[in-house]
Length: 80
Image 1 (cartoon, rainbow, N blue to C red):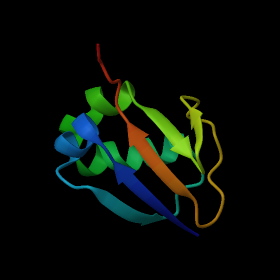
Image 2: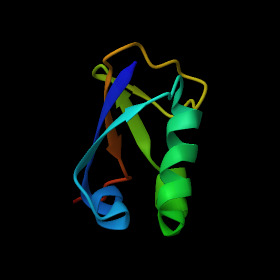
Image 3: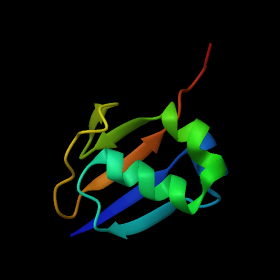
């Protein structure tokens, strides 16, 4: 099972890359753990992120990731 992950704004800056293709992650919690293991300094940013899984927004780290999922990692945005 492969998951494509795209990072935006502060998540992209914290991780130092725009995207990844990961295997062996079954839910968002496992995905976040893998990212923190590879880039520990990104942990505070990732903890505040919302995830889009197949276009559906969630913050629930227990959300399952289907095979070939597309996940967007979105930090909080401010605007005005």
